[in-house]
Image (tube, rainbow, N blue to C red; front, side, top):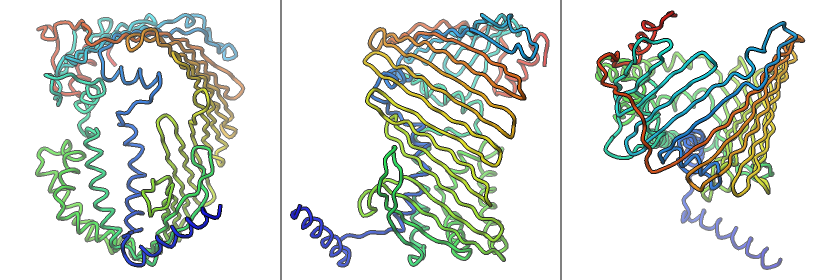
Length: 492
């Protein structure tokens, strides 16, 4: 114990000496700014993260995305109850919907058949840059959408890339938000974060330590807080806008990802970008004129920012003389483990949300809630996932309480994923039961589902002749929707 105390004292003196002599260069303002960017980017990076959990669910997710597969699923209405409302639900019981899909990774060919409920038989196909819709019950001809694909069909195509390519072709305004997009966005944000950090008033920066709940445990966090007034915000905004005027990298990024699709030429979009910054600079004094703003932003790190701390949460308080706002946002993820929380309070009204998925001895345990006290709304989530060598069983319950709305509801979800043959065949069964009580009347439904995934290096996808001269060919999504409306037997 004496040796430990001596080492701690010696270590503290060494750090202090390094700081005073300048041997260890620390910029808490940049740490603060970069931490804010990293924290805000983390959910988006996790969404596009191509790493898979080292368990059965991760194994199947990876196979679906990277390997050819043949999948079939069946959904059946097991029960429906709404007797108190006078509805005859017997005709719905036993209703069935079957979905069969095939995907060949080497070629990117894909097919999906949707049949059932006695209402619809639909078929969807993808082959290189062609997407086809065929619904014989309603359409007189197959419709082929010749999309602007960005994929290289001379190499294997992951399913995620295939779907993203279709989404981007349908809605170019939404942008192609892949990992390359996020990397470029983060680089640009960190560039401007550095610019802001280098122009912060260091006298308005402070750091403290606080206890924060992380993954269900109380952890000591380092907190960097920066305070701003209206003059600080005006000056920093001006600095950022002036830099943006000459930032060709920023202009290219914004124009290509967010503006180009709305203009006839790239030049028009670039001119609009330049004009927007110029107008913002001209109106800067007007925007902040007469304002009195007190703003404090705090970033929580899981270790001392003298080291390589990871941002855990951000807290924001603001008072502009009209209203007081208090925000707290936390996002921590480690594989399948998740700890997320958000609280917003303004003039006495509060909204809070929390969700955790924590590892246990035999799997994971999930808890969550969403509360709007002023509206009498509360939603809770409780669930478990039991993991064994060849199976995962999930049991989850979602409960809604809406006292002011005079309604409540419950959704129960049970599912089991089983490995039949390693990396070749998997089976899933599930049951979903939902009910809602509104104004004393209750309606509900029970649906069970079952299905299989079969994986291989390649599968033979049966795609009809998409060059059929009787097919209707379109080159944009608006034409596709219009042709579907025109060919419907009954119309819309």
